[in-house]
Amino acid sequence: MFPLFGYHSFLFLLLLCFFPRPCFTARITPEKITVITTDTHKATWHNFTRFKDAEKGSHVSGMSELKKYFQRFGYLSLPDNQNDNFTDVFDTQFESAVTLYQQKLGLPVTGQLDSDTISAIMSPRCGVSDTAPRIHATKHFAYFYGTPRWGPGSPMTLTYACSPSNMIDYISLLEIRTVFQRSFSRWASVIPVNFTEIEDYESANIRIGFYRGDHGDGEPFDGVLGVLAHAFAPENGRFHLDEAETWAIDFKKVKSEAAVDLESVATHEIGHILGLAHSSVKEAVMYPSLRPRSRRVDLKLDDVEGVQALYGSNPNFKFSSLLESETSSNKGIGLNCRSSKWPFSLEVVVFFLLSMIT
Ligand SMILES: [Zn+2]
Ligand SMILES: [Zn+2]
Image (cartoon, rainbow, N blue to C red):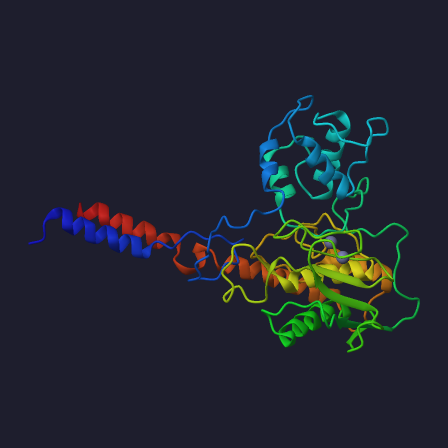
């Protein structure tokens, strides 16, 4: 005869087997991948956590660095009469900048350095400055000043080329080119613009390259994470990625916790090349930040409406197909949840059996 404890242990183990694991729908980390956690890299902006919950009127050493961040991304201008330096005081002007930032990033608008805001500030992001949010329409696409676009022809063809000297060597050129081809084709499917890859880098409309630190355009890169890439508004065509990132096209093969999805960043930067600025819609490709080991490549309604207002629609594009794909992707997320595999009623039955036996 089994001892009572052993019998119960068996039932408990049986119960554990039936319990589905909790679902984390936002994680894209594939199963059975061990993500290496390491402190060898110091992600840019990681020390901004110390400003969390700093209150208006307070003086926190080093806050001028946070003000420089806000200046860099278009939320704050230098004071006129203080020798062109920011102070370490949380003043009214800084509070306004925080409020604008929260509106633009689709965060709860509190005017305070709460945890949501600090977390957004520390997220790796695009180096292109954000434009001020529109009054009465905080969740929307945006354009650069003057609404520049390529043109005026329609349909038109834009050429692109990868730099012969500024590429990365741990992903094959063929794979990189395939990623860019897919990224360009997403935009081409919604507007009457074709993208063609050519060999002659100098003569291409769009010129793609990986660069490290100061690379001569006044927008130096900052090492691991922080700023990931930047691109210039029409009709400039420069498209630069930070060589210091761990670029990935398949997270199953890259285990670094700081890995950045090349295709997500490529698709985002092409939006800038075409004339879109940053959107406040978190799911949109044109949202300014992207977490490491995450992917955001599908154009959302906000991206499509924004770019079509500049170039018109591709005659083959149908809004209904976009809405369908958004609906089915939502369903796909739902399928990962517990209810689909082991219905709640089964857990109730197991509990019931257990209580009967004991
Ligand atoms: Zn951007
Ligand atoms: Zn650059």
